[in-house]
Length: 129
Image 1 (cartoon, helix red, strand yellow):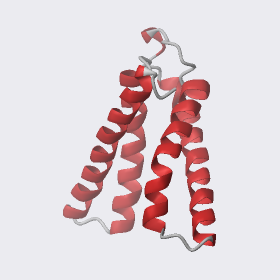
Image 2 (tube, helix red, strand yellow):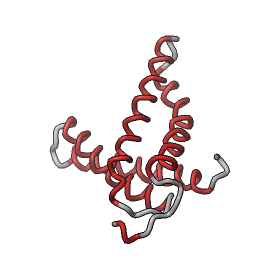
Image 3 (tube, one colour):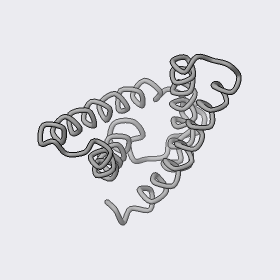
Image 4 (cartoon, helix red, strand yellow):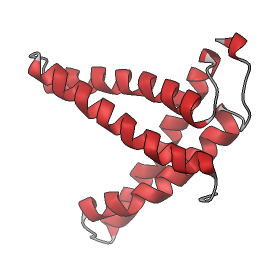
């Protein structure tokens, strides 16, 4: 799986997505939004941006029909990440370190779920936009 070219692209696109999300959050804060709204709107914009970049750049899929599956995978990965952090917290392991340790496993889980349940590992006709 790590040798899969799409996984390497997934990691690079993930970095691009993180930069976009942080930029949106920062821009909204600069524009005077309360941090809670900046996070909310930044997250929504980030998910939409991630959906398009991950679908198109990683899996060669531009179908907008997959957005709900994409969001569902985000929810599953979020829950697994929280569960992992709770395990580390139970053993009194620093949560910054725990978050860092979980980065690669969460990226692998996210990639596998996206590949299997969202984008099907196949290119979808661009007619499905």
